[in-house]
Image (cartoon, helix red, strand yellow):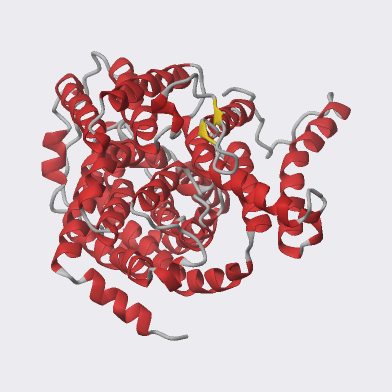
Length: 509
């Protein structure tokens, strides 16, 4: 393996500008993780207009820092307030808050910081080794393969993601429909524009993302947290003992592997990884009743896994051009804004972006480890700021940011429309993630499919005659049919009671 591109990547990261943006990104990420509700997706959406004025490498380094930095920050509110700052930190509440009630909040935060650093570092090493191999393999991809991958990505994020599957599929279909708005690139015909010149060029990704993730999250969380008062637990010594480290080392190792592999999967991500790591540790424990009552492993495993997953989710984005989750879809959009197409050619055409982003994660994880423990006291003070003060400021920044993209009031109107749409979606149990992912992939699916049909002379069976696209489409059929098979088998055994060690499935959203 030629290591010169990797070393050149470190040279890119160590440039003063890029180091500064890496520091800014992880600090913003930690702050956003501490403030419950906003999340990295909303923050990245709000900050997208700022990426216009800086270099592509610096922009993506900063946005990546926000993403994995938020995984650190979300732990603090989970432990101190029993209020997850991030969805991926929900599981940490169970044992983290229990430890805080025992006067061991510092231990929980210290173990979480160490586990997060190790999980992130292991995942970065895997990313460094695996990403070039995947990119080299993907050089054989043509329009049929990209079309099949796009369909698989939309289907997986809809069926594997959190929430009600049917609602996720409906949201994805709406995203695909929105992607068709505007002038047809093949024929020049206008579609769904309603004779509006503003819609002739299609719906811009930035106002859509800022509305669905930024404004809607603010509106939803103001309602959810209205009049709720939380007092943070006291923090003592943040350095874990040797006994705590000994109990946690196995959970940290297993969490790193679980997070890395689940993070690569579309729809997997940090949340699913933290749940899987926690469930695995509880199942293999000699005394599973300790979990939920202050088990250190119950903090170490999910916190390690969610940081490992946050890093490994960059593999399909950078090498295949397929976002693994909603936040990756936003970073995908940020790359497109900069005129860079993520995918197999990224390593060859933009090695500074590819290796600069990957190597910045080494620096970012070290910065997070250095800052996370000493800054706990600062974050506790931030938690006392009322949402009623922060929300109007955030809304103002969001609308101003949308206006500065094209200097058009129409973009502010779009942000408000999609903000209200996102708010109604969350109220009705629809997640905006599948919609945004499908919107991002929609244009690629359409153009690749139509190019493929031109290649095949209009014969759709050509997709199945090519080895790679045929295999991917077989996976698409498997993912689509498997839930139907399970449902049919369940109906054939309606009177069979679940075994004692089997979880009972609930059909709640």
